[in-house]
Structures are given as structure tokens and as C-alpha cells.
Image (tube, rainbow, N blue to C red; front, side, top):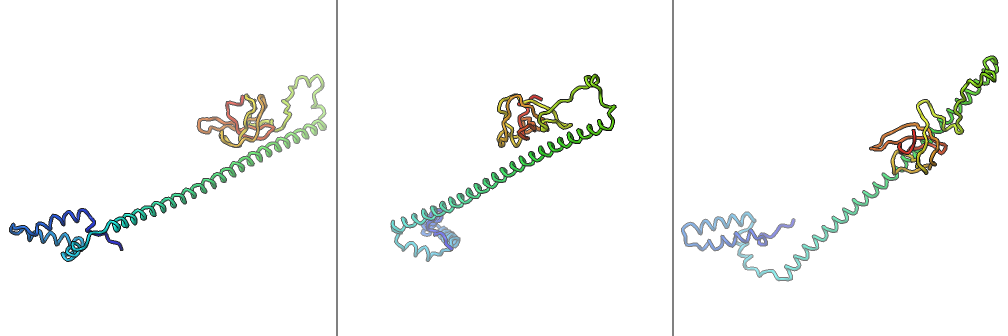
Length: 240
């Protein structure tokens, strides 16, 4: 294990330079006190008077030696800096890979939500068609069994004609209501978010069915159904 040289420490040399001249003091007891403090100072650095004598007898280090020491210190610092940079680059690469994974997962989740909404819309359309077919069958059967219940030509004028829907997808369910788009090329998105994927564009004045309303942040959104499918639009873009 590397141990620092005490003679290279300014604090050690400063105290040593103060204690050595005091050894030659003519004051009673001062030389003994200086000798005792010197021995304690050297013992703290694991040195003895012999080590001090040997070191004082050595020639001073050459400039080339000092230069080599500085070069080794710089190389060590550069090595530490390179290792720190490599570790930072590795962490950044891991972070980029994690972000890429999250983006893929988010995209897949968006696709799954879109598929679920499409399946829900198809199920509602099929249910509405089944209801219409069943109602028509019952009407035909009822007219055949009870002809006296059919209104005459004069009585038929008193019955209001039901609203006719060209597309069964626009027939509202009990908890739904009709609406009309107010802007041209209205963007219908997969999710209630301005950055979500656009699945369709609707012309101004298009009839839609409002299925659900949601508030995301400070923005109100409507889940609508049209002949182009199901998706989310801003609440202010649809008259309802």
C-alpha cells in the first residue's frame, strides 16, 4: 500500500524546521523540551532521528524526478476522468434504451385501446341491427295475427313518423345523444389527447353520436361514433 512521504508535506516540514533550531537553545530545559517534542513529532510520522539524518544527507530530488512525479499524477487524473466518462456514457446508453422500450410499450398500448374501441363500436352496431331486425319481425308477426290493430289510411296520418337513420351506427343508445361537427376536417383521435394518433377526419356538419364525455386536465373531450368509426374529439368542436 502506498504511503505518502512526510517530508513532502508542508505542515510536517514547517514544524520540523521550528523544532530543530530549538535543540541548540542555551535556555535551561528548552533544549530538552524541544528534543521531546521533536521525538513525538517524528513518532507520529513513524520516523526517528536516524531517518531525519539520512534524509538530510540525501541530495535533493532532480528536476526530472519531480517532472516524472507530476506526469504520473496527471496520467492518474486522466485515467480517472476517462473511466468516469465511460461510466457516464454507459448510463446514458441504458437510459436511451429504456426510453425506447417505453415508447414501444406506449405505442402498443395506444393500438390496443384503438382496437378495443373499434370492437366496442362493432358490437353496438350489431346489437342495434339485431334490435331492428327483431322489432321488424315482431311488427310483421303482429300485423299478421291482429289485422284489426293496423291503422286505416285516415288514422295513419295521426301517427308521427319515427326518425330515419341512414346509418345504423348513428342510432343513439339510451345513454347517448346526437351531435353535429362544427369545424371542417375535425380530427378524431384514438385517445383524449392532442398528441394521440388521428384515425379519421370529419367534415363540418357531420352527424355523430356522443357516447361519453371525459375531462383530461383542463380540456373536455367527447367519445363519438360516426360512419368512420369511434374516437375522441374536443368538446368545443361538436354541437351537442
